[in-house]
Image (cartoon, rainbow, N blue to C red; front, side, top):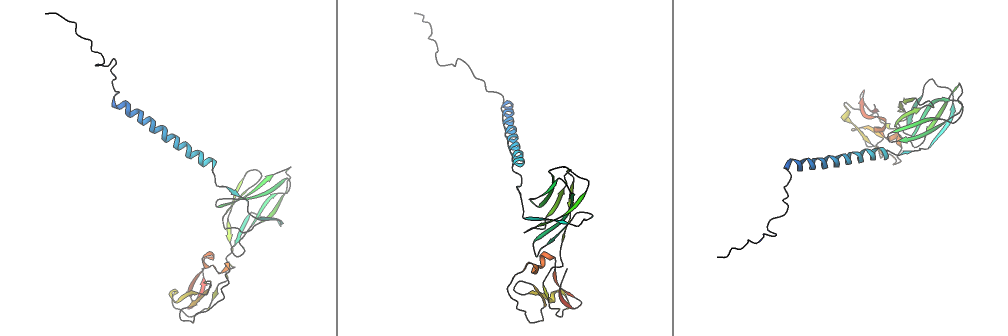
Length: 218
């Protein structure tokens, strides 16, 4: 019997055995990736908000000299769509800038020269305006919110003063819904010429029965 040396096992066993990492290590790596992704998304949103603000526009406006007023005020006429403001500014070295940003009109007094010790009142008319909020910023940076008064006495709807007992007896008619009449009356036909002063909702008006008569009222 002849003894032979056993052949070498080549390629059967790997030279290095790779042990997989524990499951919790894999979970930590995945969590770190998720946190990094969320952080990237959050930073992108903040950057977008900072860079893409509501664009400001310059509305049509006119500026006039006016008699002195005690405090700034503003009024809006739906008929002419004009916003009228009165603000006190320094008589020297300033100019007024008007802009609209979102739901707000911004009136800024900008310093362009030497300031003097006197105040003047300026009347500002913003054309094709909307009844938005108004903020005035003087040359020193102080902000003042100016309440806007809606001019309601310009409503031009028609009341027939027909007989009624309750509000349900009063109906709105006319080509532009400008007539408040009793349902017991014959319908009134009007010319189809629309005016903004016919808009009852804009002026807060309702067709109601008051003292037994149908009429427009707030």
